[in-house]
Image (cartoon, rainbow, N blue to C red):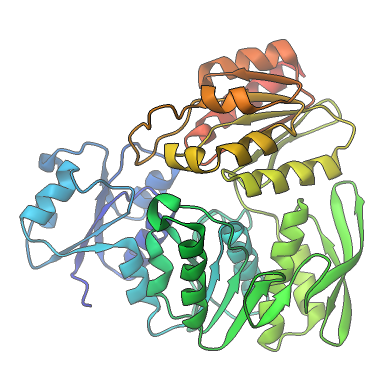
Amino acid sequence: MKLNSHIYMLGIGGIGMSALAKYLLSRGYKVAGYDRVFSPITDSLVALGAQISIDSSVDQIPLEFKKRGSVTVVYTPAISKTQSLYSFFEESSFPLIKRSELLEHITQNSETWAVAGTHGKTTTSSILSHLAVELKVQPSAFLGGIPINYATNYIQGESNVCIVEADEFDRSFHRLYPHSAIITSMEPDHLDIYGTAEEFEEAFHQFSRQVSHTLIYNFGLPLKGISYGLKEGDHHIENLRIEDSNYFFDWIGPGFRQAVFMTYPGLHNIENAIAAAALCFSKGFDPKSIASAISTFKGVKRRFEYHIRSEKAVYIDDYAHHPGELKVLIESIRSLYPNRKLTLVFQPHLFSRTRDFIDGFASVLSLCDSLWLMPIYPAREEPIEGINSEALLERIICKEKRMVSASEIPFLIQKERPELLVSAGAGDIDRSIEPIKQAIELCC
């Protein structure tokens, strides 16, 4: 595939698309694009030279990006085929490629280290990227989140190593043929795409067969390679203790025991760190150097991200949007704050996911002391009859539960004064972070 000199990106403000846009800009391509709203991500792209519009009118496309023969159009799966800009480019016979096709093109001549899995892709790939940087690998990395150490979702390196997230949505990861890979989980999701849990699992088996060298997998998954886990696996941990929300443990690997100090909270993040450490160990790096790098990783925005951490109040925000992710999140928070009342603000993501896993959501959300449930964020979907947050709320049996809108949350905080508040979801709940912080600071 040959890219033209000008790249127009539909959905340019998305976390995956924006990393690709940064890569293209760094390589001298002319980049323009559309997204629904301006954001800190789009602002950063404009600062790098991208032209971005939030108006879907064809008139807003810069003239130089309307010339057939010099423009390649890249789109995210979240863009509807009936969207006006997509329709214009398609009807005008511009070359249109998916985001995954562009990532395939970028990585085809690299030593690719990929991270796949229903849960943990972004955190694990971010930790892996940090370890690789600290170990002087000089990788390039395309991430689905923003590591706090680097404040960007694209890390530009000088070596041939490329670290990527292998996204299972729309079978995108089947376009990748990585040298090494981590598979964190195979819990069913995206059943609107795959149809059955069996088809979903088979997609991961197919991906595993595309790994040419080393496969690291979560212990218990039906795979072959090098296993890892908290308690079991070729790489696991022992002697875990928690002090001031920091973790101390022994990393046990083939023929060694290494003490590790980790400041990034969440039991699931220890597991993610061990996965990344196992891959680095497989590349010949010594456990002591890897452990030292783990200790300096500061975390990822919207992945167990602390916003307030005081004696009177704690506020954590997380991207969790699947029952399995929520369960691990709640369990990790309970282990850190066993004596605090847990209030969770949750925004369900997608009507189809809510429908497919409604019993799982009801079960895990019932683990909270108090639940504030927001309406479903539809993203790319149309409503499904009978599937809404009210129907989910009826199935939840926690001590306190209620429906809330984004605008109501600050007033509820002032009234309830929660001592441990967690917001979670993959929609636009992140826009509520600042109002939540301000409300907590006012009353606590």
